[in-house]
Structure formats: C-alpha cells, structure tokens
Image (cartoon, rainbow, N blue to C red; front, side, top):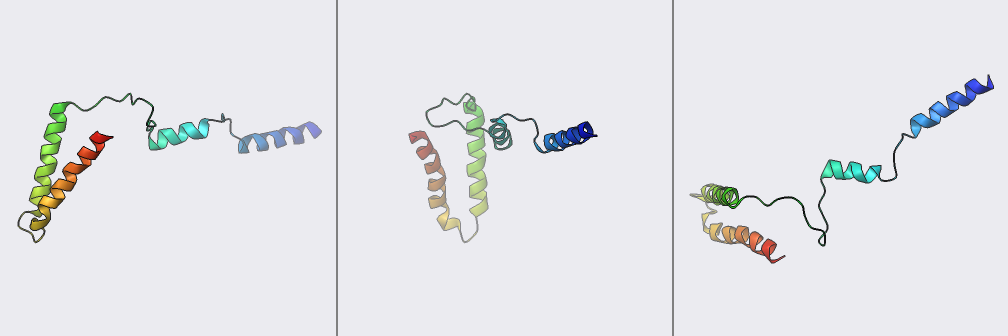
Length: 94
C-alpha cells in the first residue's frame, strides 16, 4: 500500500514537471517567433534576388501611387513616396 501511494505521488509530480531541458523555453520561443540574429552575428539567410526585389518594389510603388491617385491625399504622395524610399536608405546605412 505504501508503494502504491509513492508511485501515484511520483506520477502526479512527473505529470506536472514535463521532461524539458533548461533551454527548451528559449527554443520554443525561437520556433514560435522566429530567430533574428544579433547585430554582431552573421545572418545565414540569403538575400532576395535582385530581379525579385526590383519587381516587388515596382509593384509596391505602383500600388502606393494608385492608392493616392485622384484622391485628396494625392498632394501628399511625393512626401509619402520619399518616406518609403528613405526606409531603404536608412536600412542600407545600417
């Protein structure tokens, strides 16, 4: 009877304490939210091809211009477009 109580207690304790390593929480977070290397670490991911980037940026600028065309915000489009381009300038400066 004492052994039965002891084994139940162990099962209860074991069910509350799942087998996990000290770093499992970190690995779960990385898997859930993606991993972004620190500034001093090299990023192993490849850059997009220049053709794909060029086409995507052309579509983005065209979509922005179509969004503001013939609206009362059309006068603000040059400033918005400069802000969009400036994002890439700042990123390249880093």
